Length: 412
Image (cartoon, rainbow, N blue to C red; front, side, top):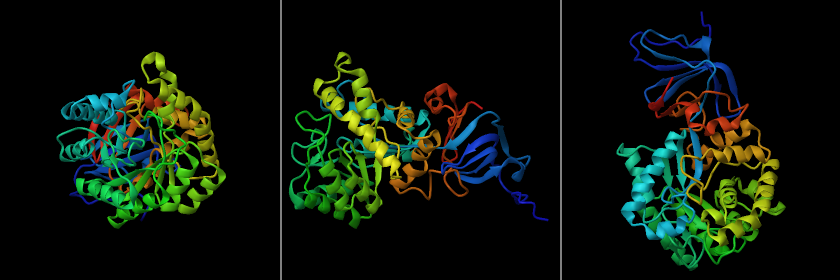
């Protein structure tokens, strides 16, 4: 008689069971007293405790009073950038070996925070790609990484200090092809000015519509997604008309931009942390005055834009811009708290950091939710983030971190 319970063969290998905990699936659903079963590198079962009786071979962890979530995802970081008061100056001053050593440390810290996947949105001299490959090969410890290589920008445009400068459609195509040749997983195009580049304004348009179309076309031909640094309204719209997949930052969203995002089925990755930390630290802690002033000018509009996008039900993914001043790697989950501050429920912030983030990366079939057949990325918290989203920022409350079925922390 079928009672709905999971059955198994007698000769089946040992599995790892986490039982009696609150299970947050990642799609908005919760199992109050559930079991998650990991077999090898995959999730084998997620459901009520009674539907999966353990065998004698299984390793069983009773996680009563704890919460299990999918591995968390930061959809916008800079692994090469060190989070110092003036990180662009540091990036230009440090040698390639120094940057690589720092980046490896940033990767480890990020994983230790429970972030099992990141999307790197611009590195120097392809160090980001080397770190990604080092993690994949097992040389380094860190999250799964998708890398954009060098951001493609106009001459003197935002990010020129470590980007690939290009002018005109043909040069943009060549620049995109260079990133693909280097092994980039996606392409980042700079549609507007930004905060951390002296002498450019966040609202100013940089690449033209035609240049953005050329870049998107080249990426699409190679089966790659695209993202754009886009803060000003006109640049945001240009990027959307060009067919971009995600808007990064989105400081100045008007109603037309909101409608375009919905029409084009694009995503927004707000990175609230970036101007927040710059303003909080200020000039007194060494942040360049121009960055502080620009952050103060945009922060109110930034938060209002994200509120509008949220109200319009635009898919919003968690991204931090980690590496910008005092926006440190390993402290990524502050962004979830800020999302809640502007009106997200804790569950919506978790979905933004799991399911929606996986969709931005194009990895929704592999990660982002706790479901049978997906990669076994998970985090176990001593507490309930649905009651207090801030609990995720306390490293001592993280009881276990698993990536692809392997424990990177286990204090259960």
